[in-house]
Length: 297
Image (cartoon, rainbow, N blue to C red):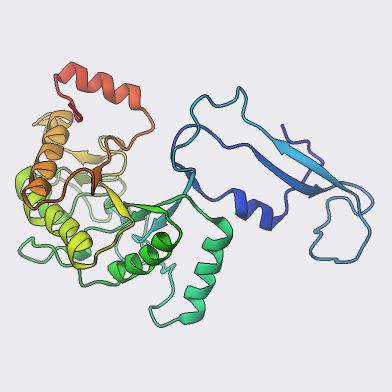
């Protein structure tokens, strides 16, 4: 445990924090930090040249991780912010704040590139908002600023041999089951329904989107896809009155997505489907067992 007297400077923190893990094991970290008194606890970059003692702080996992992370630390690139509206109709989660530079802001993108070079993440979770990519007929539309950002990120990731997971986080509104009676938009609860028709969702949205990524844009680093963030938790991926049963419907959705991708020649070796995006894998496995289904037979 880090002693109270030890403080990690901002640059060291940015290099080791603010990222997400591609697995459950934490990575051991080491860093030099300022001591507490006689220049102690002061910002060492703020007063260059001043004599001060430095001691080393060591952060270790205990017990040592038996299975280290396969891809290392990852970075959540969340495009929902700046897309407008509210996340899953929740009034406490507005998406109006733009966090990425305009496309013609060269200095802004240079700064992002410098930050990525310093952080050196092993993989990215690219959070692509689904609704801007569905037209009135429910067809996929890739002509958005979000895909221009993905193209830029793929360039960095390909050059540095990194992997990108494409993740919609939510089901597009066009494909949802009817909302529960009394749902407000935005309102005081998170509400995102499951697709009413899994086959239509897979064939008209998921498969064309992945085809656009693989065959039109030719983004080499995008290797995985996830449709929903933490499904069946806190209001995300609901079915009306749990009919059909949400777990059974979710597994069927995966069958339809895989079928739709196989039909257009995109194999699981090229784009893999992430299983359950959840903090409770054992709970989900037991839920599958009780329903007699398996997301990955």
